[in-house]
Image 1 (cartoon, rainbow, N blue to C red):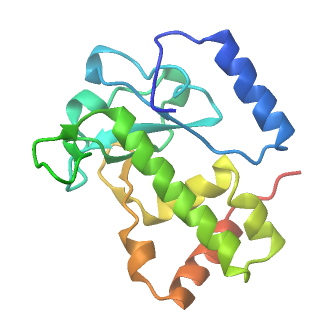
Image 2 (image 1 turned 180 degrees about the vertical axis):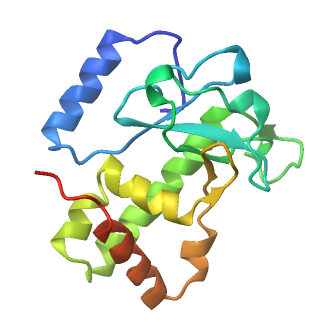
Length: 186
């Protein structure tokens, strides 16, 4: 969700809860954090407990001030994730056509997540535990945190390079290991 609102929007919350219920908790929600930097908090729906809040970085992974709001009070202490969100090219025929903000970062993060999920689905070698968890917030966060580069202050820069550069065996071992580290829920 490459958008945000200062306050919760009941219709969106209801739709998200219904979708999550229909899918049995097997949905990963991503949302743009905010483009107000320290002048505002995370926006809705990014501040929701079951949503991955996405911040914007520059191309070397540094969190960009305007696209890195402080977390909502109930998210204090939680890892925060960001990816390219500053001067993102959107028209390859022109170097001048760029967008900046948490919205393009959210779209890029969604692409990274989809790439991971599709890899697991298409490889046909992962067990049911991995296939189930790769479609949950917990599972994706476990994968992202492992490939994320810590930028301090509990912030992680996410780029797909490690997963793309590894051979299949290393990539598969990584995914199995990360999902295997998830605490068992009772």
